[in-house]
Length: 82
Image (cartoon, rainbow, N blue to C red):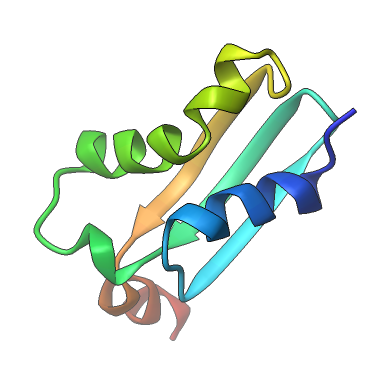
C-alpha cells in the first residue's frame, strides 16, 4: 500500500515545490502543492502538471485517487499565509 509520504516523494521527484503536503488513507490522497512552475498557468493546467508526474502510478492503480486541494505559486501561497 502506498503511503502519503511516498506520494509526496513521487510528486517532489517530478515537480520543484516550495511547499508540498500530502494526506491520505493509502488509496485516496489530498495534496497541497506550491510551485513556481505554476506561474502563468490556469488552475486546470496546474492540476494536469501534478497528475502528469504521478500518471504511471495512477494507471497502475498504485494510487486510486489524488485530489489537489490547492495548486498555487509561491506568491499566491504567501499571500494566503499572512
